[in-house]
Length: 214
Image 1: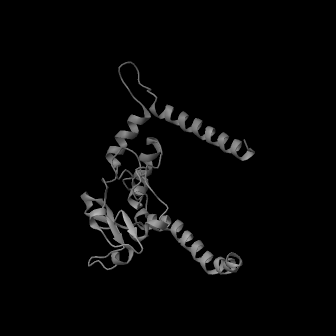
Image 2: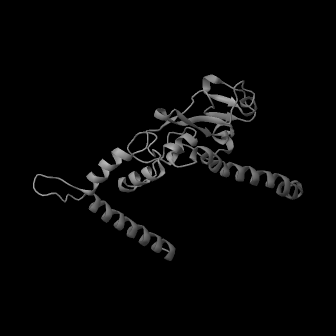
Image 3: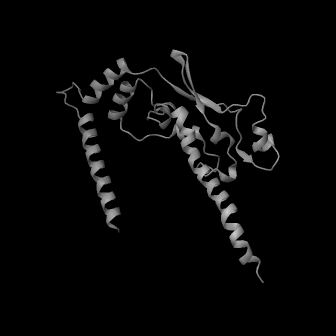
């Protein structure tokens, strides 16, 4: 094992121990006899009074396709759409879905051109079941922070971080995710296309004479 891996594992174990210790104190029952009192109870009651309004993830299933082709024809039966024809829709949009706060009538549209229009051949993200992994999948991904961090942060930001309502804070609940999440995912395809284009323009012409030489 390298020095870096040893250092990384040591840091990880240290952080885990500290986090576990704080969680133990947070959940510890300081009550006497039948009376149960913990920091978690106090925080939960305060959170119930101060918690931000509930927000949920809304995905428009009519926008986008499972497979986006460059030259192939669109085939709704196979959930397949041609890259060019996607831009010719009557209701074309660079937004797909939204994070909605019903009690406030607020809807934050999700900017999703890369998740929606990038051809599957250069889209490097795939879900566990083999389906296209989009900004909506990323939005549902748990941040992995404990409850004693999630609640204060939610109150401080005045934002519901649990947008898929599974009891865990989600990446999609973070500020500005609806605008920057998809462009960040698009960095990978852009780099891939750039490398392919550079290879085609600079490397292939230099290599072809050697390949075709008798």
